[in-house]
Structure formats: structure tokens, C-alpha cells
Amino acid sequence: DALPIWIAYATRPANTVAGDYYDVILRPGTTPREDRVLFVVADVAGKRIPAAMLMATFQASLRTISNTRVPLAELVADLNRYASSNSQGGARFTTAFLAELDPATGELVYVNAGHNVPILRKKSGVVERPEVGGIPFGILPDATYLLGTTRLESGDWLVIFTDGVVEAMNAAGEEFDEPRLVRLVDGGAGSAPTQLLHSLLMELDTFVGNTPQHDDMTCLLLKRG
Image (cartoon, rainbow, N blue to C red):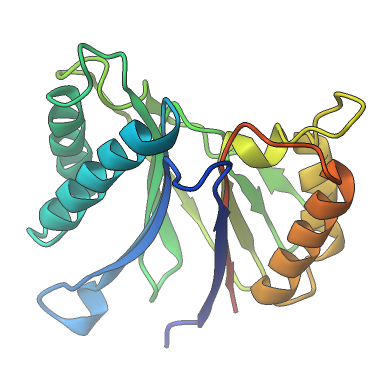
């Protein structure tokens, strides 16, 4: 039987609208054992309304392609071609991390399109960084993307985030940084995703204080039971 998957996510726009995006999409197979779950976190270059509008078209394109049951490699290629047709010659590119999970086996196939490298924290405490993929979407319509593969076992975490999390800045001009995020995930590995997400947001609040932030913050956490 498939082990349960727990998910928690949050986004905080730096302005009234955001160019960050996260999604969880069920991709039904011909039988329940062929069902897959697609996890996505993306970040459009730029700010405010133009970035939000481009992200809305990215989301619509992804949702449409996801319904066609094409393999992840084909989905990514189609998504990049669509993004390239709306990127103003590559100026409005989109970084993204897409991971397709087989709930029955824990097999994870992913593509990192120029995005912040997620944290895969194994139950043993070993940390892996899923970085296989290619350049951001929207730069070259015929760009090649490699597929990475790994496996989520019971007690493993996958933490996907945008640069606004690790580049959050305090009044002294210091960044929150990735080592701090890794330590927080390590320290909260025994908790539920909602609890770890709450701890992360509280830690970010304490760190930045009243300092205005220039980037949206988005984080998606998942844990396999």
C-alpha cells in the first residue's frame, strides 16, 4: 500500500501581487496504481503585475498540458516552448522545479529549470540536493532538459522554495541563507509539515523584523509517511 504524503505550503508576496507560484496536481493514470502527483514551485523574473500576469499564463499552460498524460519530459518541453513564446525574447524567463511522485513506490522524477535547488532530507539525516534539469523556461524554445530521479522513503522530506526565502534580508543586510534553512529542516524533521512550515515562517519573521523585502517568499514542504 502507498504510504501517506503530507504537504504544507505558503506564499508571501513582497508586493500586493506575486510572481511566485506553487501547485499540486493529480495526474490520473489508466489505473489507480498509475496515478502520479505533480509538485511545482516556480518564480517569474520581474515584479508586481507583469510578473503576476505571466505567472497566470504559466499556470494555465501547465494545467492544460498536465491533463494530457504526457510523460514529464514531454510536459517540460511543451511548457518551455509555451514560456518562450511569452517571454519577450527571454527577458521574462521563469525558474521552476517540477517533481512527479509515484505514491505507491515513492519514486520521484524531477526537473530543475534553473530554480533554487530543493532540500531532500532523508530520514537518516543525509541531505541531497535535486539539481538535475536545465536552464530557466522561456530562454531557448528548444532547450534540452534532463530528468533526475530519486526516491522518497518513509520519513523523508522534500522542501521546495523560491529565492525570497533564502535571500530574505534583515536590518543588518544579512541574508537568511540556505545553511540556516537546512538546519531548520534538520531540527524539525520529526514534526509534521504544517508544524515545520509554521516554524519556518516564525523564524523568517524574527529574522527580517520590519525590514521591507523585495522578493516573494514561497515554500512547499512534503513528507512521506
